[in-house]
Image 1 (tube, one colour):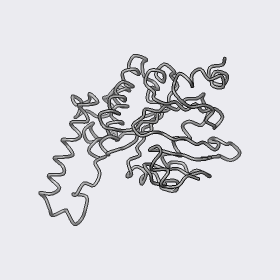
Image 2 (cartoon, rainbow, N blue to C red):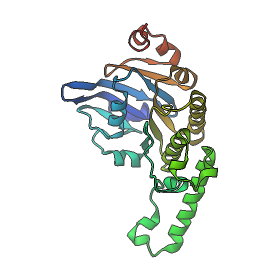
Image 3 (cartoon, rainbow, N blue to C red):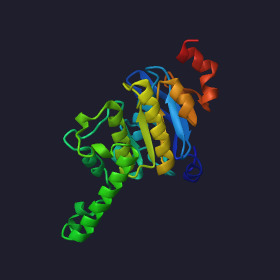
Image 4 (cartoon, one colour):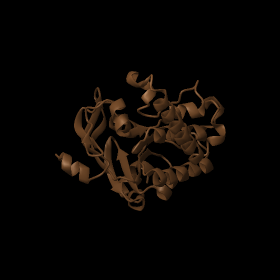
Length: 260
């Protein structure tokens, strides 16, 4: 097993021998990955291969039956999702999970961490929490501008398009100070041209905010164009990994994924 010191020296997110079963079904079968900090990594594979289950395990929504997970040098194997989130490991969903009764701006503001006004000891220190609120609004405004949603700041999620909802979820993750974002099929249900635009945004956000991405994706053209590193999953296992060109042309992937 790798030590804490080795984990710090390696990737930002490391899984070693992770396994998850549901009754007699082995959904994730002894998976090991090492996601490098600052990368745009992509997880591909056919339906039912275990991709979403792996994301759920990495984010803490499912508890691994065995194996270990490290994030940013700290073991998080037994931590619940909210504690992983507080460490900077955020996620999005195939169907965006937003607060429908809150505006676009409010959906970002609610993700702002350590607001002094939420502390009982700071309730009477009006100047302190008002300044923090001003800083939160300033940060949220900057993020909305970056993801091109600033003109929709007062709209409800129901008034946004599918692509805009995906961007809002990413914006909320950035608002939380996320160091890494796990994304489950962000291009699902999006027109091809818009999907390419979304991935271009994600790449620019990666560079601007120094955030790492691990994205579940089916569209191989997006993988080839934007991914730094690709993991291919079949039958609950990582069957091949590496640069996009290597993975896409791997005979194992062609056989199981492309039907070649």
